[in-house]
Length: 437
Image (cartoon, rainbow, N blue to C red; front, side, top):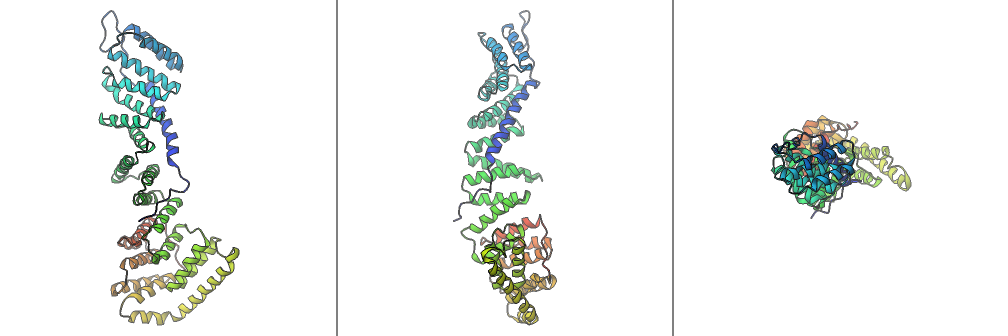
């Protein structure tokens, strides 16, 4: 069972989107004041146009429109009230009154009232067909501004059913689902949008993926959350995302201890080592594996990061560094003998490990050749672990395409495949530091 995923460090996307989309929604409705709606026709000489409004309604409505142009919202509402008081209004007259009332309420900042009026206008049988979708969009935006998320979803769905294609309405739909705690549907809708972007060869926006990460997290869908974090890393790489996804891999209940050093290698490459203990543990594990050159490099990086060589443990760090130096000298002294024994072994384990060691010492061609011959010789206990190590060796050698191909061949559910996927993402963004011979 996977432990619960943690939220992205220092992030709270919903609050930012509530503010930004609320403002955007108001702006959309305000823009309706200059939309090319069907012009108001006033009946003359007892021969009404089709459709038209009577003088008793048309005159105060014209006065209300004049007040709106001057941004006199209260005056506009007073004139609209006069028009609304007319008895036996036709459906078209009702539409006109509610449409202008909505615009006045937007001007006054009454989002709930404006949304209701826009909805009444579009629901009137007298509403011109050309006006219905813009009115639905306006009503949707105002319901969102009023934090009436259920109504926002209802009208956004209606807008789409009626043929609307404005992307801002879909954005309001998705964020209303999130803010209304319908995380299941929100996840489905956002995932569909992300897939559409990818299929079209476009990069999904960071905000889109952040919101998708939050919807999966709200459902305690740790597997889904990890997948979204990997997309964030692939499209918008940041240290926070690396910290989040590495934490997810490390705390997975099935993550094997034997891959701890491999995890540290990825942390070093992505700049996410955060403590002296992490560097010390990685160096010790590397020494235990018989890779003193790698251990020395890890220790040097810890010193460069000013996490080693300071504080109460400074002497311990110094001793560890001396041990790595001593072991490396001994390794160089016996290298030829060790290589001969590895080549003569009945299986490829020693040959593979000896080659890996040469890569850490900077002898890339020799080391990679030995590793590949070791794989071909067989006998390695865990093939996916070996492919992970070979991919890392290609990475250190600067052969990025070959490294990515090798990492992509890592399979299984034992943690090696998860690390390999992250290496592929990292390779797409940054070249490695090459070990010095």
